[in-house]
Image (cartoon, rainbow, N blue to C red; front, top):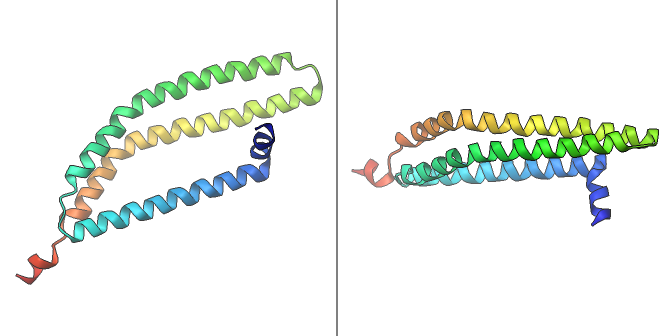
Length: 142
């Protein structure tokens, strides 16, 4: 386990994780949009699918913000304690870098969650508008 954590902490491991996560998000986005487009072509009413998902996101975002805030605060205290108790200069520098990395990641996660909360209504409107004007092939033939 320690070996795996050291690999993940290295710059190469972080780059690999970033590429994998971005690839996964892109693939899921493409699959979701193509599924929505196909369903809209078939004349499906997607509001029955969209409303529960949006409701779930809206109900989870506030508790997640709370958990991220609390967890981040506790982790910041732990990192600060480790920095304060470090005796060697190399160890202090390593801890200082860990604190900088934590702060960047913490701010990024927090900002992304707030953006998700603010963007959800606009995305819901966009999806409703993009699927509302579609006509099924059987309706077009009549």
